[in-house]
Image (cartoon, rainbow, N blue to C red; front, side):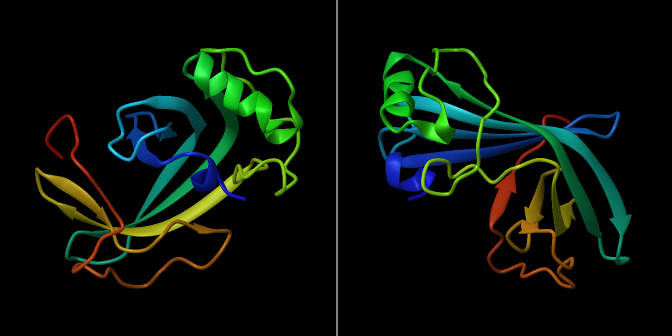
Length: 160
């Protein structure tokens, strides 16, 4: 079973800070319209940029050193407790907790940390970052971007 079996939809956010700090937040919802939130899976760590092309293609190494799960309300807390998620019997609403175990039957978190992801992105000046391949765990960096179908697309708060 995966997290997607327990939740109707999810949204992924990556936040890159100026000091090479990084957070990844997966928001999980009970409905397919991403309105009725239940829980967040939160990773934090660092990133490193490696320029790989003259055409705004960059390799980004993501290294996550911390991982937490946070039920966002009573319903999310009840669901995680019912599932005995990550071997934990008590999940308190709005309290981020570190998963105890990583048995795939009980916990579909990607952990344990440290967790390294490698990816290649296309930076569209002033508007977006497009991830050209899924995040690959402890694997070789992709060598090209499929610009026709990025897997992740998000808009920065400020100009690049």
